[in-house]
Image 1 (cartoon, rainbow, N blue to C red):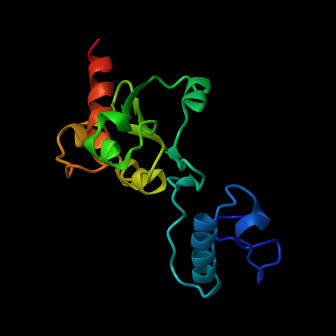
Image 2: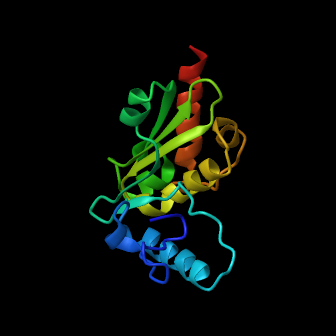
Length: 169
């Protein structure tokens, strides 16, 4: 299966669970849109590699990008920053004292490599990091950006400050 989602039979396209990873509703929908564009001979960009994974449990769990395990196996130097919901006013307002946001930055160029969230609104919160990573941004964006208060988005600032302090050591 190529980037155009065309099967070995030239007029048959396949997307979603039938082609395997990542087998998520959101990515399957995007694959379908791209396959339709290819089927009708319309231009289409390749599918992004920065797609979110969301688990709609209690608490919600979501991630985008790399994991620490994958980066360790690839021998890519990284640093993490964590913000706990109980440190954030919005987390306290929501009564979520166990949620957290973890950011993973490249240790040398400080680009954002991964975002992991667990807690209230994690599947929404992850999209901020998804956008920053897709645009090649990094720790400086979060350090220099003002986030609405009180919101869970403030976790990005706190987690970036945590990683920044570790990188200074």
